[in-house]
Length: 103
Image 1 (tube, helix red, strand yellow):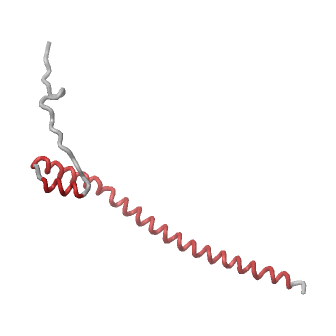
Image 2 (image 1 turned 45 degrees about the vertical axis):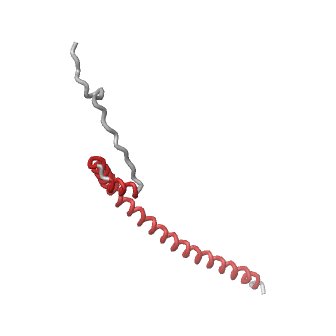
Image 3 (image 1 turned 45 degrees about the horizontal axis):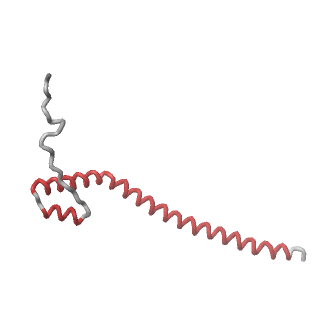
């Protein structure tokens, strides 16, 4: 009967260890899924970075076209997308355009 207390202790301990192992497997699978999702998002961001410059150029060209032709439809299209711009008229003669005088 000396082995009875040892059996009473080992069975719950083994069940606890088995539970920890199962929990570890479940957490590992969950983290792999999260890691895969983060990796996909990172790839998407890296793939879209070059498009940012193209987008900026398109918006700038549309804004210039709208201001040049006084096109309200293009201005409204840009405004609907949250893009606003203002046209500044160049001064008649700025300091850089003044002719140099010789003394």
